[in-house]
Image 1 (cartoon, rainbow, N blue to C red):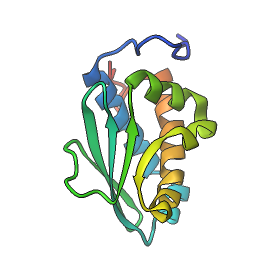
Image 2: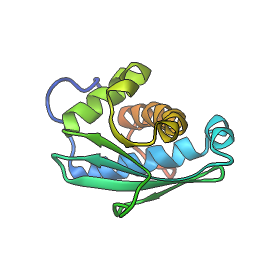
Image 3: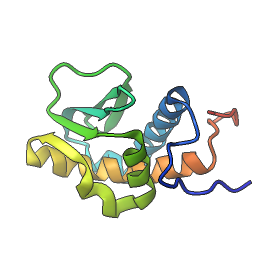
Length: 141
């Protein structure tokens, strides 16, 4: 069963399903050796937001580990924002070319650190969108 890429319409799943797929993509991104090596000396708190869905999550980069918390951080060092879920998922589908379109607030050096995490996250999320199951084979949607 092949999933079509997301078109300009809203994603065909709920916010809850999107949250589960996002969590799964972060788990997969955190397992990537290249990412772990890139952030091995980093301690950084980031906030990622999809405004129209009022969906926010905190991503902690802590010495080679990625930790995700579903609550927004009060004092993030870097904030990544997407105005709409549609725009977020279109950027996921676009891949590396879309990284510069992400709205961000914070130090430019932090952005350079987070770029590799975001690229790998987008890659992992594209795969999860094509095959939305968890590690046990249970559907995420």
